[in-house]
Length: 505
Image 1: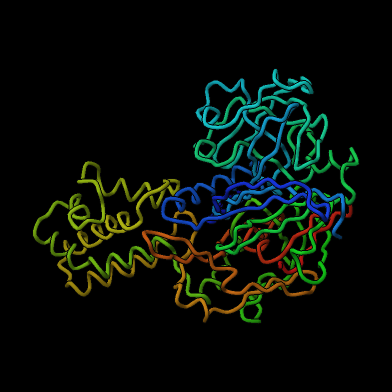
Image 2: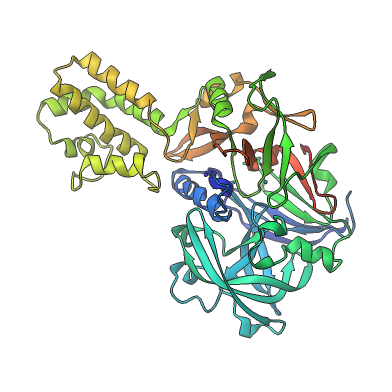
């Protein structure tokens, strides 16, 4: 991602893209286009694990829980489910190619090592072979990075790194020898290229942009992101080092100073719903711009108001109410007929198993443990409904009271990964939402903050907002992920320690 990364933000968007490597164009820009595909049921499971990848891309530091110059270098990005924007780099001479996530929420570059023998993830991805590079320099310093969902371990090396058409010499990076997380196994990426500040870099390794700056490889001390959110477009986005592509934004950028180096953090003001204040951040909140997080994460006090205004419900709650509405009476009749509770959901076709393990265990694993991946929501909702109805039958309640009780419990269910659904047919009726940054409003339309995915041939709509509370003094905090960066072209100015936003074109 991101729970899809930094500070544990669930990333729900991932775009699977074919990487198109381009050369320098007539305007001097090296362009890398992204192609996309829509989300479906299978990629939703992967998107949920982007919650790990968002955590993956953020060291667990206790804060948990973002011109048009001839010498610009435009790097190819792939967009996997809109959660991860990634592209190809080369390490060594000749270059050994790796797909990496370009992540503004971390600062280290790491790729799997040929000396990684005991991690499955290493066997499923490209591995760096130092013996094949004529520019390799041994470092040997060992390191471990702990993330929200796992950890990596390895050692530092130095070598040339090819980014677009730029060759960064003697870049200090990590060769991983252990990748202890399922997310690394299923991830579409080989490694991570961090674009945060040196303050959060493990081993004092300079981020790639700092090396570019010191080696005078770029004309301006900036890099910029354009993320294309049009699901029907072939181009997915651009990452430009040293400048901006004027074709990808309108008007001028509004700049805000970085207030706390490490992440790209700044101060923002109120969030407006239909032009009305939500109050909580009227006196100011911190915010982070994060290319590795797909959604917008913020204080529960505000997100609850947003979700109420747009009619959002937890994904589990939605599926649960559908089960009660469509199958409640059938479940009730089967239980009255003495059908074994463990077999009810398989008999009505919502689960594929036949009661080989207990209903209560399954419920616990999905609702309480939260980290189960790829579970069928309808099956889970059915199992819970069976338990609830069975309990009410023991009390000799009427059919109407039993089904009403089950429906009420559905409304109280949390979503395991924090997602909320909205009615796709009501998008045109939803209000605009706006962030106040530098005393200006940055508006998101419903079409921009609602994420669409495909499931069993049907379109499901997900709120782009999720609750995420960071205590003082670090919080309250917003994380502005790809939903925001897709609407606003973003400039990361490390020369002036500022961030700029302009409407994407």
